[in-house]
Image (cartoon, rainbow, N blue to C red; front, top):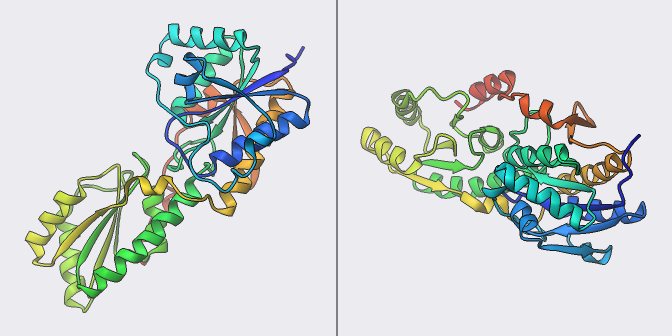
Length: 324
C-alpha cells in the first residue's frame, strides 16, 4: 500500500541555478492545494543536519518566480555523504514529521536523496543545474538562463575583440560538460569551440587556424572554451606568442548562475515542481523528474545515476562546419 505523505520538505542543494525559485514556488503551492503541510529546509543537506527548517505558506513564495538564486539558500555538505550523516538526516525528518522531500539539485544531491529514500523518507529529485549534465533528462533547471547570459556576454566581448582585431578566448561554465560551450559556439558564431568531450589538446591546430583565418581577412577570432578544459589565460599567452596576434582571455564565471530566469526556466521548473508533489501524493519515492522527447517523465534515482550522456555527435559535426 502506498505510503500517505502528509508533510513534505523542499531543499536546494549544490550549485544554484536560475529557476530554482520557480520550482520551490510550485512545490509549495501544489502541496498546499493538495492539503499538505510544507517545510522549507535551508542550505540543503547541511541545513537539514542543523535543523534549519521553517514552515512555508503560499505567501512564503510570493514574488519569487522571477528571481535568480534560491530563497532556501544552498550549500555542499560533506557530512551527508557518510552513513552516519544520512541516518541523522532521516531521524531529523521524522522528528519534524517530514515524510517526503523534494530535492532540487544535481547528481550529488540525488545520491543523497536516494539514501534518504532507503531510510524511509519518500524523496523526489528535480534536476537543478546550469550544466545540463544529468543524463536522464534533456532539460535541467537553469541551463536556458545560463546559456542566454553567456551568449549575451560573448556578444559584448566580440564587439571589442573586433574593434581591436584580437583573438579572444572566452571561458564558460559547465564543469566537465560542454553544453554551454557548444550552444554558445553556435549562437555567437565562434571560430572555435573547445569541448571536454571532444578536445584532443592539439593547440597547434588551433594556432594554425587562427593564422590561416587572419591571412584570409578575418579581423578577429573567437574561441569558446569550456570550464572542463580551462587554463584560458595561459592558453591566451601561448597563442599570442605563436601568432603575434593580441589575445585576451575572458572567464565569465559565476555571472552565468545569476539573473532572472528565462520564461522556459520558469515554466519548466514550475511543471517539474508540481509533478514532484504529485509523485509524492501517489506514494512514489526514489524518483527523478526529467524531460525527454518533449514530455515530463520520471526515473528511478539509481537508474538515472547509472545513465551516461554525451554531446550529440550530429550537433558537434554541424558546429565544426559552421565555425570556420
